[in-house]
Length: 149
Image (spheres, rainbow, N blue to C red):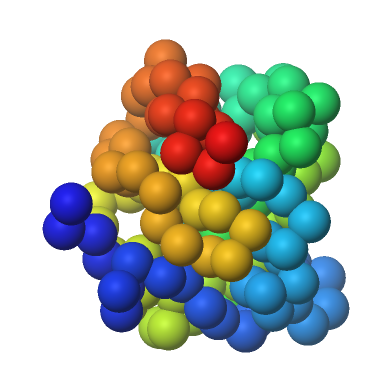
């Protein structure tokens, strides 16, 4: 499988949308699988799927997994506030982070939204889901859980 990133492993430092520091090691460590959903404030399909992702996040949590959003344009002037507003309107409560060049390089995609499925050490487990294909997320999560056992 030709996965992005150096040897298919993701490692980064950033902040959440409130400005608190976050490292990927801490983020992934306590979960069997983490679904990382990359999105942007200007992306219509990204924003359209957000309300559906919150209940999915809650279902994943019950199985020792998590969903984390990364807003790729949140580091631009005024975009953090816009991202927070979009998330609030969509009823999203799961953690969202500020995208960085490092994250973009490691989780490269032709478009967004795109979701990656990572183990507790940040290894990419499956092919990413490129596009807002809500029906594929649970399938890919099951595939990732089967890999980690």
